[in-house]
View (cartoon, rainbow, N blue to C red):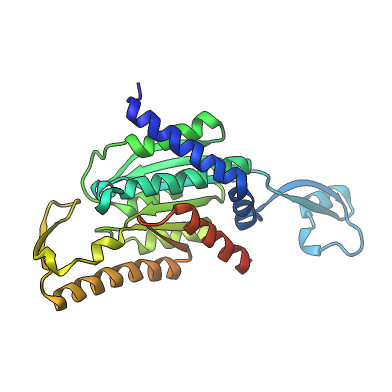
Length: 293
């Protein structure tokens, strides 16, 4: 039984995101991710002008004359959401958690994918992969994914992104769209796993960040910043202007490092702040991707 408050939250998100998908998001998604691959359809006799690289040599040998393979665009693709549900996902200043932003971003992608006829699956991870939901394309399946994003409580500490990426690679047998959603707090050593995943699949990383964490007023004085992953406290003297600037620089450098790593490994990068509408950030990304195509 889903608690009433959680049901209301899921229902509001369902109405909000599906309305946006119906208005404009579905078309942008299709344009950004069309050309998903070609599937073998049939063979036919060779005619002058056909690409010789499509000749099916086995059939040609049996029939005694050249035959070529015909392909058609795959009508359905698999979308796998790989989502960080570690302790830091529940943090956030000014009342908006990273998890809430991640859930809305995932709902927009999932419902756009389903509208496009694609199947959507889900991997939830913290210190290990904690849940896997196989891809499907039904309304109830989409709602279940969003419910799990909201309701899942992490069973392990830390954030093991390399294991989650390796798991995604293991369960996906054909080329797919993999959307990795994380705040990348305390994450390291994922370069090789990301590179291997992106070498076979279309990988988009969604970096959820809280801009308030980099800016502290001088009046805050001595602030204890607790790492949600480890419970360790880091002290910041907000009354000192140089300490504030150094802290802000460090936050910016960490975010830039994630972006550079993703680009180097062959993935796409999207940053979504907890202060902005995920739909705006994703729509801007889709437009950029369509322009590149």
